[in-house]
Amino acid sequence: MGSHPVNLIIRFVLELLALVSVGVWGWIKFDGTQQYLFGLGLPILMTIVWGTFAVPDDPSRSGKAPIPVSGTLRLLIEFIFFGAAIWVLYDLQQDKLSYIFGGIVIIHYMVSYDRISWLLSQK
Image (cartoon, rainbow, N blue to C red):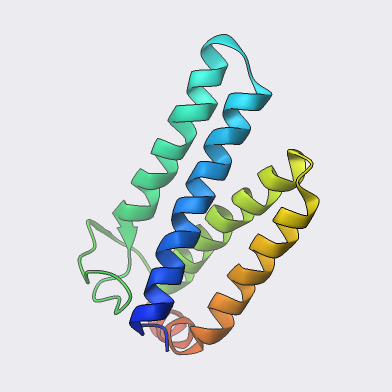
């Protein structure tokens, strides 16, 4: 299921929503230079990390890995990525949205059990 087109679309939308959430948080919570650093810079940094550190031949991605990492490290990166989005939504006092987003992320990973298993087998 991890590579099913519908699941990949859901994953892509979750990724975009996570980046937007972090950007909005940075823009609202900070002023001046920090507003740009956290509102624009942090989502850009997250995008770079997300696209750069990958497991070679990951079936849910292009298979390309600019910087190859283990499956466990990739899962940690994904946990931090989505965890940050859930936390910033909560910090923005969007409790219900935070819970809904977190729930959808958990369901996505439950449906992607085959990918999780594959990632954990990759050293």
